[in-house]
Image (cartoon, rainbow, N blue to C red; front, side):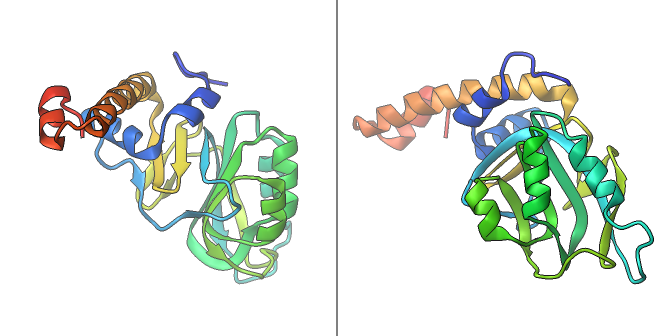
Length: 220
């Protein structure tokens, strides 16, 4: 599995947040890397970072001859440090992610799931403290309603391209995707800005005017 150049996933999780990562992406001219489609944390865990394990979903209107096949393959093949991405085009036709898939994913070392669709078994997943970001909930099973049609391929959520192994960061402010080719630079810039923001915040707390702090430190 691809590793970050300087930072481990736990360090990124603990020190960074989506807004500062978005600012770092902006500074490189990548101004459209945030998913704005209304995905929210559903299980009481408000932050998630990892490498993308992609699944592409489609709605069904006929009986599925081989139900659950690819979604189970995707979960069982998830590696430690990965985040399961369910690209379902925003469909709320069924709850495509729930307790059993979360249990299997957790056993595989998966760090969480981001679902561009609906989930169910929320209370059970909350008990597990398994991070899940989704559009909403639906009590219906995915059987004969939705299925995985491909995995480990590039997908899109809210017009944002997500390639396998890209780094994804989600918190209560939003979800940002860091393309592999700029990962090291984005993380370096984000870490530097966090340090600068801390200095600026302390200066303002100590009485410096916000404008003066911005003029001195160049951070807002």
